[in-house]
Image (tube, rainbow, N blue to C red; front, side, top):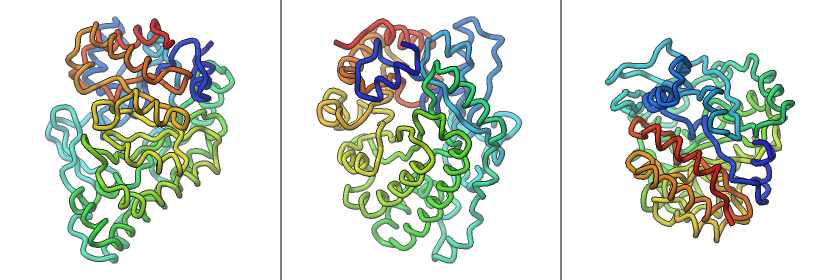
Length: 376
């Protein structure tokens, strides 16, 4: 099987020749320091570092490295023209993203530090905010031609990232502040609805612009919304169903007008108590499968949801990849393939982007073990 055949087999809940593997996407790439170490380790020092996201300090993985690790996917992502500084931000340098949210690079990560709607008092404050224009956010030039070339070659599964993460709740609290927005969801529901309404309208335009270019070529399209903490979801299931789920459903329904691709949803943390709801609104693929969170044990997820969901990720970035030995990484890979890979339905990758503390030896060990080990 080639990469495309392997991924599509897994997506159809059938057994491929080996588990498909992913690297280089929005949530499955490396942060800049980890990438630099990996290039040096592989002897690819001449490869330039191309930044995928200044906000997240992540990189595009070069084609030479993707081929080195026999990666089965290729990611289709537009250039960000609304927010594309010429060079990486310095440590402790504060900057505003295209939504006006303040961030500061600290320990190699862009931490939120100011929330422009935190002091908003009325619906007029929401209406009068300087909302970004989705038509000015991304540069789609050449994207269709690139996607069609890869599609015609038929070697790799094509995973679409529309530039924006497609988040709704998450973007709302970036603007408002997490505590404030969670309180709004209970105490000022009109405020919470007004903010997320603006965001969903923006996301729908962004998705349409992107998918009109490449939707015909994609096998998977990504959206993201972190809804979980370590022990449970960030809000009760009832609150999710009332305040978040309808907006996510609206966005997914809109996306499906422009592509037949499977819907991949990224959410960190423990979300087992709302997974049935997410399946109901059309989510096909769950990423990152944070197995260290409560209720997210991979064998139990497969048993309960394996006929309804594809699992994507699952290799631990909290302890195993950064601090484990090569043998630990191999053991982790075998565990996740054993739990999730039976009868397909699993694409292997790291649980979120690999940070500076992940040694390159463990990156290599992860992909080598994935290729070598087969689920029964």
